[in-house]
Length: 63
Image (cartoon, rainbow, N blue to C red; front, side, top):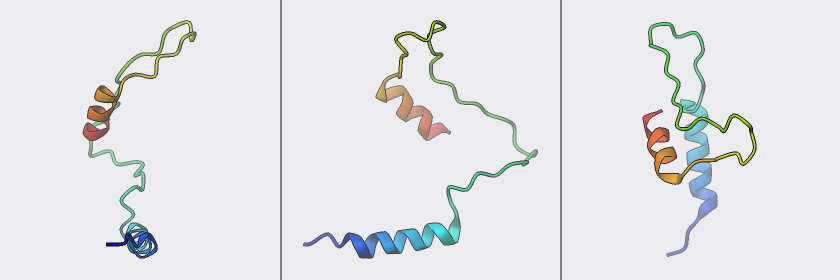
């Protein structure tokens, strides 16, 4: 079975353009504000910690 990426990509790109699932909505005051913060950066900015896959993945799902 060959993976026909051109047909698959064309299909999903058309659907994304139609439904706009990744469009940010501003000004919706009916919802409570939410800021998902996983880890604070180090105050000094040196040795910036980028986190770990497990907590980042979970917070991406929640957000």
